[in-house]
Amino acid sequence: MTRLQRLFLLICFHFATQVFSEAPPALPQEVLFDNWQVTWTPASEENNVTYTVRYSSSFSFDSDLWEDVPSCKQVNFTSCNVTLIKAEAEHGCVMLGVQAESRGLTSDLVRACSRQGNSCSPKVGLSARPGFLTVHLSRHSGIAQEGYHIKQRIYFGKEGERLETYEDAVASVSINNLKAGERYCAKVQYTYFDHPVGVASCDKCEVIPPSDPGTKTIESTFAIVPVLVILIPIIAYLWLFQRKRIKEWLQPSYKMPNALIMEASDLAHIQISTNSPTEELDDITSMELRGQ
Image (cartoon, rainbow, N blue to C red):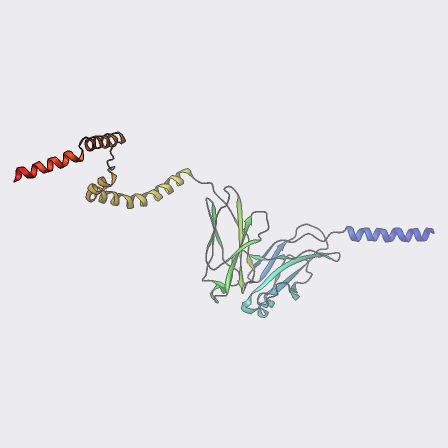
């Protein structure tokens, strides 16, 4: 192998190593959608990174079909107005996301979320109590008013985990059996015939408070009071009007002791055996003669 061939192989190996060792750019952070403006935060200060905003028409039933927003393709700033695509979407609802690009490599798509809520994004509130988390939904806003087939999909889980567990609902929902001291999060997205519609709400989180011993006492008291209210009148009625019958029910039936039963049986046997049939017949005959 000549020196020129060795040099060529080294150069090829160098470029191959560089290509395969390069990682895609970091994911954009805090991708938000508000009033047809998409904003995001770069994950790093890396140079030569551009961003592209992509959208999916929600009512197309194909959530995997994403297209570039023409005015927001490979831009080097951190916000972009997407009003131009509003006319293309049914009910003005689209799903939006941002991906980074650098050196020919592209990051995964990060979907946008809405903090304020709008016609295509649910307005969500959370409240935590010992053992459960309540997700408050509005049925009288946005496309939720369009018909029965519009539902709200609640994704929930522990903070830091992917919110993959979900439940479809049309009204507020309480999630039970949650551990005290843990922080749980939820987000909500409209669905149409089980397909995602519009931009989801941003994650909201609450810490589940511990149970208060005083609260348990109060709850136990409230549970006992109705029972007493029912039982006291029944007991009073039975005591006033059915006392004699109750005593009869409660009085044990008299049973002759076995010893007395045996003694009585022996006495009867002795009496029968001492009187022979002849004597009894003589007695009857004498009684008849006296009568005559």
